[in-house]
Image 1: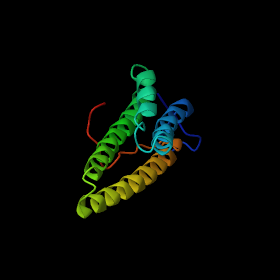
Image 2: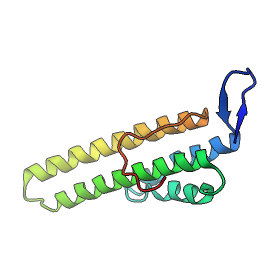
Image 3: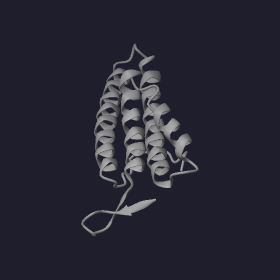
Image 4: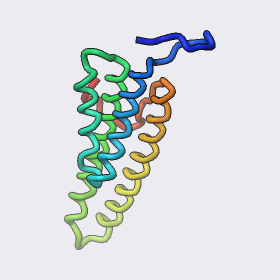
Length: 133
């Protein structure tokens, strides 16, 4: 559901929709920070489950956050798996670089997504495996 903004120009998402989308993006970021990248997909999944039949826009934003966090989880798992080859310098170097890239991407993308969702605009995450829609 959308409503016309007060200026008469264009349409924005209703405040409840924006709030749910912001929650999906912020819980993804908080989940990544508090669990060191392991459970960032749980918050967006919960929002997706709550909105899958009632709010198409918030559902699509939650699905994007879930897909992005799942992709980042896979990259994090690859970095942890490659660190098990601790006796080789190259896997450790690659793991550290991958962790830095994942951390920066998670931080940047979630903040940008939450800001856009708070103003009722779509955000499409750059790297995501399309699992949920």
